[in-house]
Image 1: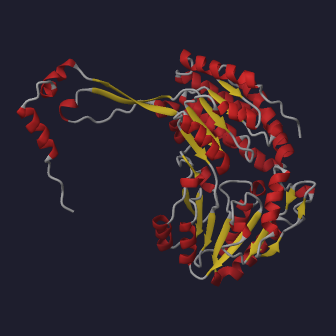
Image 2: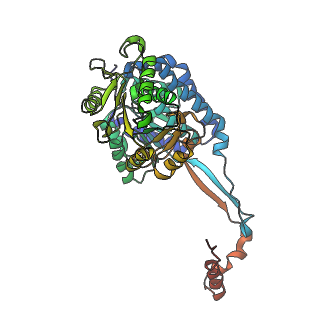
Image 3: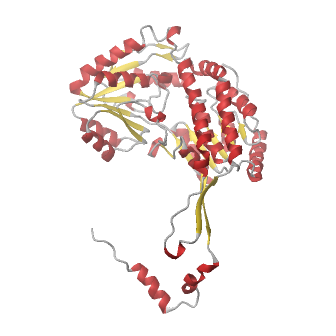
Length: 475
């Protein structure tokens, strides 16, 4: 793992001032300029697939297929933004009624200004560049702060951004707590943070001091419901696949499973069958290409949760501190007060909790913090209605896990403690845009304004009072 060269504190001030100079120059306002930068970002990813795969392998042990998925999302989303930029940036003309119908009014998306993007370590490429796509499309200069926990990736991001993108508009700042704290002392026009809730609170407090608009993409314990009417073999395969992506270090993956007790034996057997197919050899065998935990601190945290569980490990459980690898682990018969239910696991441990009735699962979910997603394997319209009516989450997904990220047109974001604000597609553009009202009131409108001028008349008051006394429909 390579050493990360931190940006000097003195340079951060110059970077901040330089980006404001770029913003005030208006050079990013033309759509052609933004489109060219989006194409450049797509080229950045496409041209450097091998280098990105290598960096992700060094920092996270990520296999080529998963690494290529990060790169593919950057290319796909950059091109989509470039292709739809005209539509997204077009002024919206509201329908005006009555004497205002001849007025010229519009809602115009304009750049918010200079923005700060603080990215996480678990998907260091895609979660750095996905919000940057929105900033570029909206016309905002940006500082991109990658995570210091993936230093090889952070170093590569800095090199590629300076090589492919406009160096007066998009700059990478590398560092740790001191550098991030310094960035947060400045007044940004928007801050976009992806990470854990503890750091999110610090970022939110800093943004609040300066009344800075903020997007928080956090995490949470995403529950999965396995109902009696589902195909348990399909559910097991899809849940286990999701849990093993990036060794479970993914904010939208399944955190734990509620299964109705009547189908629990079949579900356990289906999980074990899928496990044997996915891992015919030990997960630690180099041919398996199993990812590693990002740091010893995270490794120790996950190990502690597993060591204290009251459930029964029915698959996995092996650990190797030297390689920071934890085998994908299935834990059966986990109680609701278990160690594995204390916090977001963010690792390859899958706790399974048995319930007598679906309503027990829904009640438990409704009493917990709002997660990024609730997953349910079911065809029951009644269960779907209950989940919508009785729970909160960023998303509800039926019969798969985290594939909602691939559905174009769906904004991604949390609710409550899993975050606020959204992005992906047009939502990314909207996040970094201010919708500015523009209206031209013509001189010919003067007759309708005569009653507003002093001295106020009884006729003017009667007209205003009449607007208050309109008929309200009976329900």
